[in-house]
Amino acid sequence: MSLVHILPAGDCALVVEFENKIAPEVNARVMQLCAAIKGSAIKGVVDFIPTFRSVLVSYDPLVISYNKLQKRLQKLSEIKSDAANNTARIFHIPVCYGGEFGEDIGDVAAHTGLSVDEVVAMHSEKPYLIYMLGFLPGFPYLGGLNEKLFTPRLPSPRTSIPAGSVGIGGEQTGIYPLASPGGWRLIGRTPLKPYDAKREEPILYAAGDYIKFDPVSETEYNKIEKAVQENTYTYTIEKRGT
Image (cartoon, rainbow, N blue to C red; front, side, top):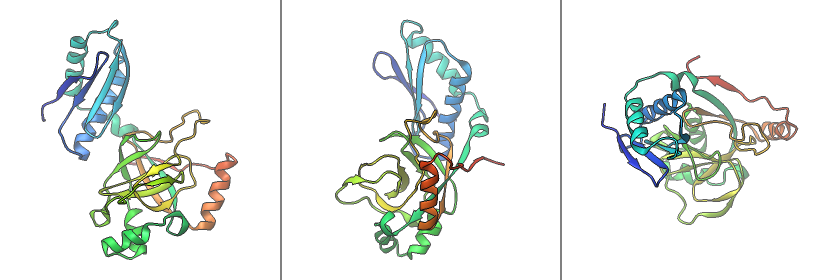
């Protein structure tokens, strides 16, 4: 097991760093530590945020000192646990690919030498691990994109991208949960709301979960969109490994 580096991040946070690479086994250690922190209920810990290869831990220095917390986290980081894997979920996300929903899918096909149908098939063939959330509330940075689909970002970002847009940026793929600027190549769109401030849990999924993209027709997209608006849509969520 590689060494863990724990460094201060301001006067009320620290960061636990694992290996300096994006890889499932490294992120698994991140999620194991998050599960251990949650299970330990350390007094003074205010919040913890996972990234690709580290965990940012915020704490109240009036309750627990930096040195004491550092020692606790060092011990927790050495514990191997399946708790994170046991709680991982697979969220099925319907996507209408191409057309007005994915205007860059032709560019992706041209760059990769694939047909549009092959791009759709490869992009939707397996679940993607959510390494971390960032950029926007509910924006999932996903791992495991087929290397045949790697496509550079746009030379100049768009000033506005519709909410629900699914894109490819370099070696990654993800969903824009809100309308925003962005430079990823748009290949489709989901009628679901990855982020909804009115929900009890505003963000649909969490780091450590998985997303499986399911291709749907424009007709199916419109039906799902209506059901989401009427709050009658039933989300398809599997427990990983079942």
